[in-house]
Image (cartoon, rainbow, N blue to C red; front, top):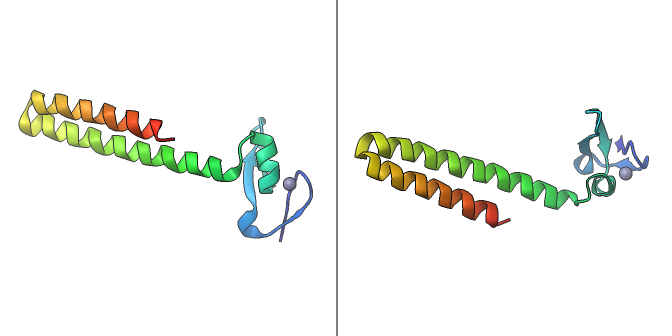
Length: 96
Ligand SMILES: [Zn+2]
């Protein structure tokens, strides 16, 4: 059993969250204190983080495809790839 370092509540391990304060020190806190400290609830935070990761990989994939198209098919397809990358980035950051 863990303890929330903020409110002192006992925490089941799966509910414990690691939060870094302004000094860069890590604390074990409960979801309620996480919400108080960051202003967003943990689910939203986790969702945003996951979303950002997916966007990153989608953009990375498109960039790879762009470079491949540029080398294999020439500048026209390379240009299309860049356009596609921008579109993917735009839509996935909007989807939040
Ligand atoms: Zn707490």
